[in-house]
Amino acid sequence: MKRFQGRVAVITGGASGFGKEFARQGAALGMKLVLADVQQDALDETVAGLRAQGVPAIGLRADVSRVEDVQAVANAAIEAFGEVNLVFNNAGVGAGGLVWENSQKDWDWVLGVNLHGVIHGVRIFTPLMLEAAARDPDYEGHIVNTASMAGMVNAPTMGIYNVSKHAVVALTESLYQDLSLVTEQVHCSLLCPYFVPTGIHQSHRNRPSALSNDAPPTRSQLAAQAMSDKAVTSGKVSAAEVAKMTFDAIRADSFYVYSHPHALGPVQQRFEAILAQRNPGDPFAGKPELREQLIATLRG
Image (tube, rainbow, N blue to C red; front, side, top):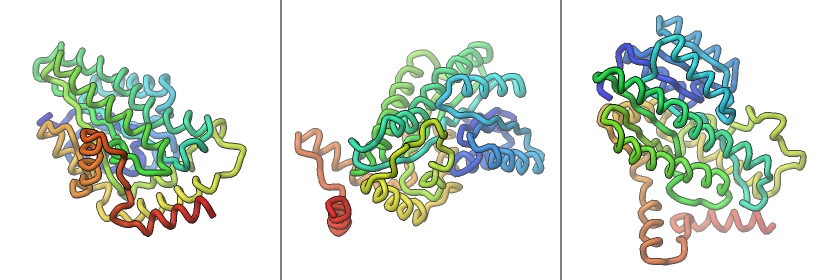
């Protein structure tokens, strides 16, 4: 996708983190914006800020785990702007703990947002984009799905999050292959960020009450939350920088987008272990003190 001026972008999770920066980048390129987010106050503030700059923008409160909400976003985009060119299936939440300690509600919440939200976006928007391409030989479309480096490796006490992001990686690689069979006008990319200060470590602030746990968090869940808080808030690469990388990848039709390319070592080690049929490696090999601290916490 080479041209952005006047084109239409839909961004889920558009009121904060990567989504808000995607909106800012799109606005600077002259795009029309459709923002969806579950947090109404942040959404209203973001849309108002864009409109104050003269950006054509609308906002809809949407829980992407609900297919009817994603469909409503698509309907609003078509009604307001006529078509959709760029879709960021970006909304996401985080949770952790020993994988057997996650409740059914934990799984429903994390997979509902992180996986089913992307599935809904792909299933609803791809046909709209292919229809637009069939009508207009100059149409360009692109889908960006936000996964994570957690979709490439499997750190302990992050199992539920790892599962959701590995699924997004598989879904998006499949989407890439499927699109290549039917069109030259619609493409896709996979964003795999590492630790970036986006606020995802506090995503439980928007967790639906119906999916809240009655029991208090376990020791492993508290430890995972503490590690996530520290890792995310100490990230040195900003969400704005990742947004720029992503738009650069869209222009270049690059599939894999990594916020921290230098952090791909564990990915290589994982695939080498798979090919060699070795047992999974130690993710704390470079910092054994972290493993000792975690073991002490969990066994304490």
